[in-house]
Image 1 (cartoon, rainbow, N blue to C red):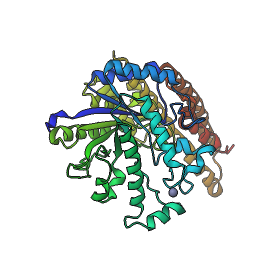
Image 2 (image 1 turned 180 degrees about the vertical axis):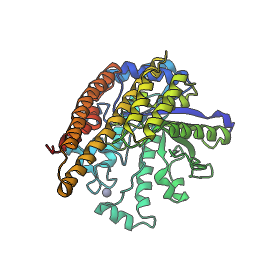
Image 3 (image 1 turned 45 degrees about the vertical axis):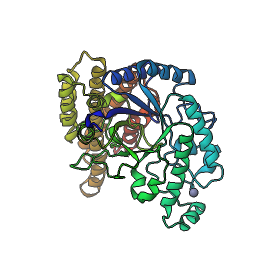
Image 4 (image 1 turned 60 degrees about the horizontal axis):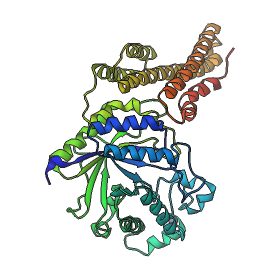
Amino acid sequence: MNPTCYQNWIHLDLKGMIPSESRLIEWLDRMHSGGITTVIFEYEDRYPWQTFPGTFRKGYERTGWEKIWAHCKILGLEVIPLVQTYGHLEWLLKHEEWSKYRCDGRVNLLCPQHPGVRQLITSWLNEVAHLHPDARYIHIGMDEVYHMGQCPVCRKRAECSPQGTNQILLEHARFVCETVARLGKRPIVWGDMLQECPESGIGSLPPETVICEWNYRNGEGEDIPKLRLGGKVAMMGASAIRCNYPTWNRLVGALPERIENITRWKKFAFNTGDVSVVIHTVWARSRGLAAVYGPWEGWLPAFDAVIARESSDAIMRGMTLLQRGHDTGHHQQIEEAGAEMKNLHSSDPFEEQALRWWEIALRYYAELHVLFYRVLGQEELYGARFWQGADPDLVVVSEQVHDGLVQRLTSLEVDVRDWLKKNEWSDAEEFLEERIRSLRRVAMRVPSLR
Ligand SMILES: [Zn+2]
């Protein structure tokens, strides 16, 4: 293989916030103009599946999806559906009607031994294939099924096999891959769980199978695919534009490590030719029922690293300020970084919105530190009064901090809502509840010492 011949694909996880149909098209245009050949949509419950009535969560209706797919076709951007067929199925199994398919009662895990499961998956894959007649692949997920094989039926099955629970994984993977292959498509499977399986077991998957090794870390040598199959099964690799970060104390994760991860994968693909495709993933929550990550604009430089688009000076300066703000624990220094961010502007509308979102992210981070001061400072005063007596002046200062904080959080909420509305993001209320009002709720729980 010519090592320079690899492709960059983008994966969009739709389990969190999604842009409006027209904004999504603008994002796709930008990525396509930068050389992205394929988009993978991880649909979750954002499509009104006939197989799973009653599960559709507001997003793009069927007609909206048809417009999006048609636009991709005009661009020559291949669309690949991703549907999880083992774990990460919270969107489905959380519903009472579908909970009977859980393995060991787990809300995210399907039981492959349930008598109705194979028919259900076959029917779903038929529907998926029918909606994507031009797609050469269907991505079937199957990552992170750490709790597989624990219900009584699965356990019994595992005990009968020398490969234990891996046998359950391999049998289920084989069934799903064969079903996809029969539909004339190639199945893509995440590689993490297969690492523990013997090579013979992996070799028993149908020849159409493509294994995708994801690695979102950055250490030397760490982003090299670990699965070595002697060329028996085709390989792809995956980086993360956005993945797990501490949602409870940041509105944007650390960007330099994302850019490093993307760059290392691209170099690896280019230099070695060991992977034919690098899928650059954009995750929307750490798991199905966890907090939403927020709008993509916050991670714009990572998107741009994928398409090798040079960032403006304002964005480079903005990234430095964001990092400086996140690296300090002092609210005044965070506010200073935010004030400097306010003066940065770009003529590129995506970059301009990224800068405005980072300004909001620093305001949030500054208030978080005021909240620490208020909550822990108040507890300290509460403790001190039993030893030395109460100092009314300190109590007044603490109450003033509280009043200012609540006022600023209220104004931050308004500004976040306005920004999300202007940029046409879904699920603004959920974002505000989980990520902004949560701070105010904590502040309000602090009892007064007056
Ligand atoms: Zn089970």
